[in-house]
Image (cartoon, rainbow, N blue to C red; front, side, top):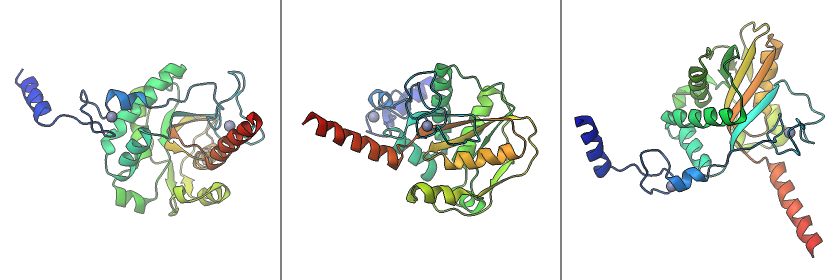
Length: 255
Ligand SMILES: [Zn+2]
Ligand SMILES: [Zn+2]
């Protein structure tokens, strides 16, 4: 009773404000309007890059059709647009590590909507971070997400099987091929994973190169299946160009 009273007083003195627009909220990080702006990626989507595909029977988009993937499927929960972009930025770079609960909630509820249950996987692991980066940041955001998910699905979380071996420049500043080259050999696995089905977690899907690299290491060490999951997916540069050029050709046709 007294606690509820204190909580009430606290809300009057220090109301919770939306992280995006600073309107008062009912207690969460986002107001209703900003919460509703979150774009969940709805199927049918490509199993390898989460781009929209024609129907539920089509597992691969045209771009992924002739490529080999070490992971069996990737699910990206939302687009990397507002309000997610700001929240993920706070989570990664501004020490708001407690946002792991919020992101885990989004992942769990969207997985439920998609009818995906991770509880039959043997373990969850996450994309590693170089120790020096870890030291500077104090936490690995992918690791926090993996741990929360593992907790929810009641399966083991392992942070000791893949680890970063060299400092890689921030992926944000790199493009396409250069980005793929960069993550090559950046991670090592130190375990035998014979026949294990593993969930691999990361925060953002950009080109998929990091997930591909980690998955292929896990597979080389015996893992039988990798299910990859990320909170958000960026529109890759190529996609944006494609969207822009298809708009151009459309308006050209309309003329
Ligand atoms: Zn808001
Ligand atoms: Zn694809």
